[in-house]
Amino acid sequence: MMKRGFTMIATLITVVIILILMVVLMKGEGLGGDTVDMRKDGLGKTTMGSAILSAKDTVCQTNLGQVRQALEAARMSSTDGPPQSITDAGLPQTDYVCPVGGEPYVYDPASGKVHCPHPGHEKF
Ligand SMILES: [Zn+2]
Image (cartoon, rainbow, N blue to C red):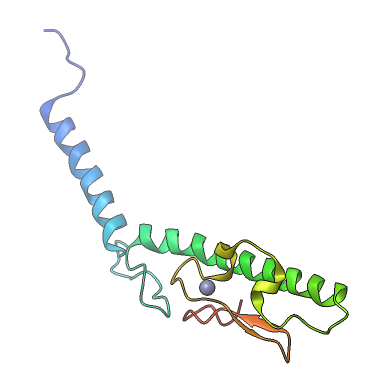
């Protein structure tokens, strides 16, 4: 008798394993029922969504660093004191908002500090 490559049972088992892995990834729960760490903003409940938002968190952190450096450069080069608004930094407008929630960054000219108002981004 000639041997075939895959039996019907082997194909079904492969499909079931792939489905189980997809469910685990989409639901955001591990096999033991442990859930993905909840974010402060309540977004990213699935594993994939959480990974995407983690990348956007990093973009927010990087944008804030660039805004701080640009404001510092504007402060150092200006003779009129610190810049009065965040747009004085001369960066593209897309760098002034949080990539996760779209909130504009908050700048305090008195202290020179810039922060993101999005929940969970206070530490950036
Ligand atoms: Zn942010």
